[in-house]
Length: 460
Ligand code: ADP
Ligand code: MG
Image (cartoon, rainbow, N blue to C red):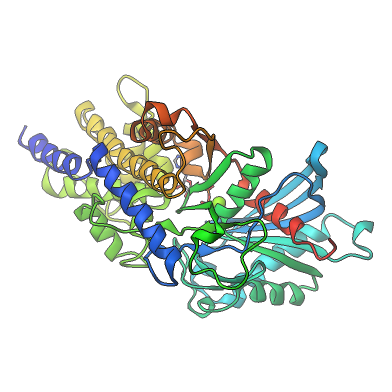
C-alpha cells in the first residue's frame, strides 16, 4: 500500500503540473499570436522565426505535367512522381518510394546525407525507364525540407539549425538546394530543384489544392510546426516589392515557441537538457511524436525509483532514452481489454516490467493520458493563436476556415486527435467553431512540393 501511495503521488503531481485549463490555453494562444506578430515585424523579432516561404500563391488546380518531389524531415524520406492533369482530372498518377535514413547519416556530414538521398532519387528515376517527355525537357523537383531554413528565393535557402534527430554540423549555414543539386549531379541525374518548401507549406498547398477554404497547415508527426496564409502587407519585414497576389505563406516554425504560460515539468526540463538541442524547440518537445513516449518513460522511471510497484526490476531498459516510443504509448492508451492485457504486454516487452497489477496498469494508462492530453490541448491552443492572428474563427467571421493537418501523431493516435478537436471547439466557442474545421491532409507535404514545383516550372 505504501508503494502504491508513493507512485500515486508522482502521478498526482504530474496531473497537476500538466493541467491545461481553458484560461491557461487562452494565454498560450494569445502569446502565440503575439510572438507571431513580433516575428513578422523584423528578422529575429521572436523565438518563432515566421519564415517567408516565397510561396505567394497556393495551387489552384490548373497545374499540369510530370513532377517529382522529395520529402525529407523525419526518420524516412520519400521520393514521389506525380502526374498533374489540370482542373478536371487533377492528380492522375502518383508513385512514391520510402527509404529509411541510416541513423549514422543523421549526425554525419552533409555530403554523405545528400549523396545518399540523391542516389535513392537517381534509382527511382532509373527504374521508370526511358520517358520520352524528358527527351527535350529537364526533370523538375519540389524539395520538402522540414527544418528551419532562411529562404532567399523559392528555390534556395540556408539551413538555420537542425531539429528532431538530426545534427550535421557542416550543413548549418549552407544552401540545402545547392547541396542537393550538387549531389544529384554527382549521380549523373539531370534534375532541377524548382522549389524548396517546408512540410507545413506543402500540407497547406496540397490541402488548398482540394479545398480552397484551407488557411492553415499543421504538422503533428515526429516534430511539430505550422504554416498559414498571411496578408503581405501584414509582414513588415518583407523586403522589396509586395507579391501581386497580396499574400504570402509564412512558415511559423512554432516548434521553437516558448512562454511562461506553458506547463513544464521536471521531466520536460531533463528531456530538454539531455537533448540534441537544449533550450530549443520547447513547444515541439511538449507536443510532438518524437518526445511523448520519452516523457512517459521518464515518469515511469521516477515511479520505479520512488516506489516498488513495478516489483524487483532490472532498470536497464527503463533507463534507456527513447526506448518507449509514441506508437507504444498510443497502443497502451487505446487498450480496451478489461484487464489491460496489452498494457501488460507492452510494459513487459519494451521495459522488462513484468507482473504488474491491474491498478498499476491503470496508472500507466493515466500517465499516457496526461501527457497526450497536454500535447493535444497545447497544439489546439497554437492553432487558435494562428486563427486569432488572422482574424479567423472569431465571432462574426462568417468565412469558413479549414486547418489541414498531417503527421503520424494526428493520423494514428485517436485519443490525441479527438482531444485536439474537442479542445478547439472549447477554445473557439460553440458559435465560432461552426465555421472552423480540421481535416487530415494525408501525405500533403510531398504532393504540395510537386504542386509548387509545377507552379514554378522553368517551362511555364
Ligand atoms: P515525419 O513527421 O517524420 O515526416 P510522420 O508524419 O509519418 O513522419 O510521423 C511519424 C511520427 O508519428 C512518429 O515519429 C511517431 O511519433 C508518430 N506516430 C506514428 N505512428 C503512430 C501511432 N500509431 N501512434 C502514435 N504516434 C504515431
Ligand atoms: Mg512528414
